[in-house]
Length: 300
Image (cartoon, rainbow, N blue to C red; front, side):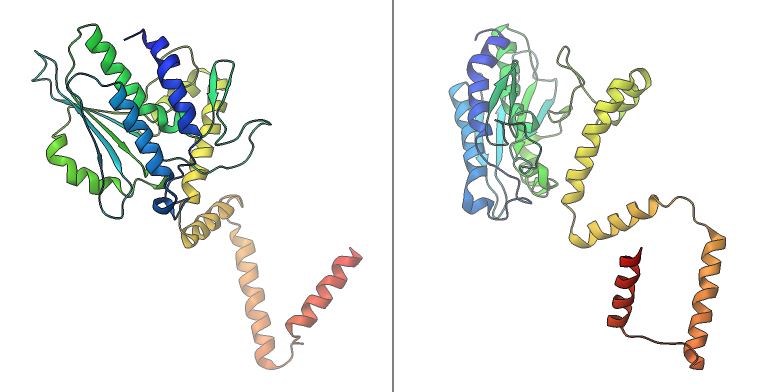
């Protein structure tokens, strides 16, 4: 094997370019995902690459449960002397978020573009790289005769839809996975490209606390990525759940409740109801109300 940077540039980047071209949107954003075949194309692309660049002892299978997105499942045995080190589970996903907006001219979600040494396009960093990085790491360990534990690579295709298919696969594959001693989720973020970053919580909250303490610039960067993640997750909710969330968010912008104003409105409502019951109130229908409101607004 070449050095990791050369192996990455020569072997992995071209495959990521092909992967970006596949509109493998998560099932929440593509209800006809099975019929359209984009998720199948993505998982097949990754599996074919792994078979072309295998690590010693690797066993690969595309596991399929009825009416669920597929899972790429790879097992690599421990090297000699590391058999008692337990199992390391490496996790990633191949499904993608939808197109969204705001792409620069000449770029797009399914248009891979390499600029200033960086690859742009939907899914390359979230999270298509995961399986390729996992295999590359194992290959270099074996090449340098370094020991490694038994490793299981599990790549799902439903993460951007809340991983609704994952529990069924974890249950079905539990006898083969075993009890992992370490789980590494290759689906986080980074603050720069000069060093390796890691987070100890799923959404990186610990990292955000540390970064904001020392760097206002990183606070802005992480706040932006957090907002985008929250927005994406909110859009996965049902219509009723989104309405309830929107009501709560709008209410949070009003500030503390004015109890005096609320009491005054309660009294005014009761007064008007009393006039209606007594027959002294002037009642108008909806169309007349709209006419008067439009007239008042036009005079404003």
